[in-house]
Image 1 (cartoon, rainbow, N blue to C red):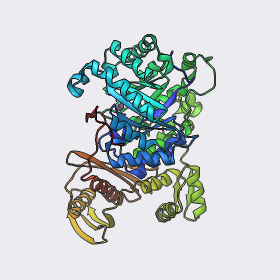
Image 2 (image 1 turned 30 degrees about the vertical axis):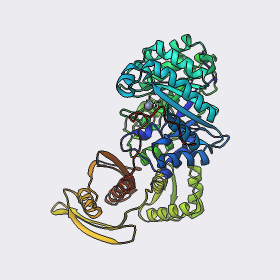
Image 3 (image 1 turned 60 degrees about the vertical axis):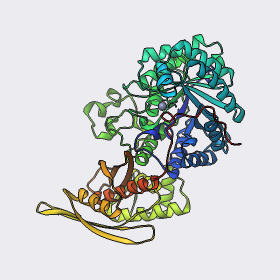
Image 4 (image 1 turned 180 degrees about the vertical axis):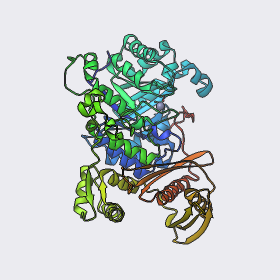
Length: 540
Ligand code: KIV
Ligand code: ZN
C-alpha cells in the first residue's frame, strides 16, 4: 500500500477549489480569516489558492504563507498548472511558509487531452517528469494530480503516476474532476493504482472529487478503505458546480464510524485514537465563517452543518430524544461545537468581557478591530436585550468582510404598509465623502432599497439572489442577509446582519457592490479552463 501516515490527512481546498464557485470570490482579509480558522480547525494542508491567477491571488497566498503556516501549523500549498511559469510563481508565493507544498497538475483523460489541451498521451508523459522535477527543485514537498483521473484509462494513469513519483512527487492525487464515478468504481481505481504502480509505496495517495451526482463523500470513504490517505475537501462542500466533497461530512463519518474504519488502518476496531487531526468542536464556527464570507448559504438539511442537522438545534425535542438522545441522534451537537446558543453578554458588559468571549470563540482581534467590534456590540445591545455567541460571530464576520469601501451607506429610511407604496430614501457616500441621496419605489421595502442603491451607484447589475435568515431565535433577533449581484456574467456576493432586516439588506447590497467595483478590470485566470503555455520558461 502507498506510504501510510497511519491516519487520514485533511487537505482543505476551500480557498482554491471552493473559491472557484461562482460568486464565492474572497478578498485578501477574508481569505486570511478563513485560513486562520482552518489552522484552528486542525487541517493538515491548506491549499491557499492559484497564485498565477492574478496579482491578488498571489498576494493572498503569500500573506497566508507568512501568517498562517507556522512550523506547528498546516502545510501551505499553492496550485500550479504543469508549466514552468505557474510553478515558479507558485514557489515564490508560498516561500514564506516553513512548511510549503507545490501542487501541480495536468489532465490525463482522452477527452481533456483531445479537446482541451490538444496534446497526446506521449506529450503528457514528457511534460509530467519535467514539471515535477522543476517543482521539486524549488520545494521539497510536491503533489501531482492527474486531472479527470476518474475518466482516464487506468493503464495510462499507472504510467503517468510512476513517472511523477520517480521525478520526486511526494503525494499523488486522483481527482474525479467531473463527479462521474460511483463508489465501487472509484475505490477500484484506487486499489488498481495501489496494485499496479511499482513505486506507489514512495508516495501518499490522495483523492479529490466533485459532487455532480452527490457521490463525492461516498467515493472518498470507499477510497479510504482501499488505501487513500489524504482527502481533498472543502468546508460546506463548496466548489466548482455541485461542489467538492464536504470536509465536515468526511471528518464526522470517520469520527462517528471510527470502529468501522479502524481495521482499514491496521487498528483494533475499538481503538480510540482519532482518524484525523481535525478539532471537531471548531466545525460549526468554520462552516458559518465560510458561509458568511463567501455568501454561499448552507441548506437547512445539509449534513452536520445545516440548521436542521440536529434535532436539538431545530427545536424538535421529541419524546424519544428527550428520554434518550441516542434514539434519534448519532452525533452529539457539542462534538461539532454547536452549543446551546448560550446567552453571554448584555447592555452592561464591558470591553474586556466582550474581548474575553470573542477570544473563547476563537477571534483574536487587533486593538482597532476590537474597538470597532465593541462599538457594534454596544449599538446592538441598545436594541437587543441578550447577546448570544451567534450574534457576536455575526458582528465579527461582517467586520472581516470589509471589501474596499467605494461606497458607504449613510442613511436608510423606508415607508411601507398595507396602504402605502413601498418607498426608500437612501444616502450613499463615495470615497471622496461626496454624499448623494435618492428616493425609489419598489414592490416591497427591500426592492425599493435595492432600486435606490442601484440608481445611486450607477453600476448596472442584476440582483440574482436574496436570502434572509435569523441569527438566533426571538422577536428581537438579528436578520442575516445574503445578496448576490450579477454583472457581465460574474457573480458578487454581500452579507450583513442587523436587527433591522431592511438595513441589513442595504448593507449587504453595498458589500456586494463594493466587491463588484473592486473586481472591475482585473483578469483572473481559471486553473482548469485556461490552458497553460507548457513550454514558456519564467524570467529568472
Ligand atoms: O477537480 C480537479 O481535478 C481539480 C484539480 C486541479 C486537482 O481541482
Ligand atoms: Zn476540483
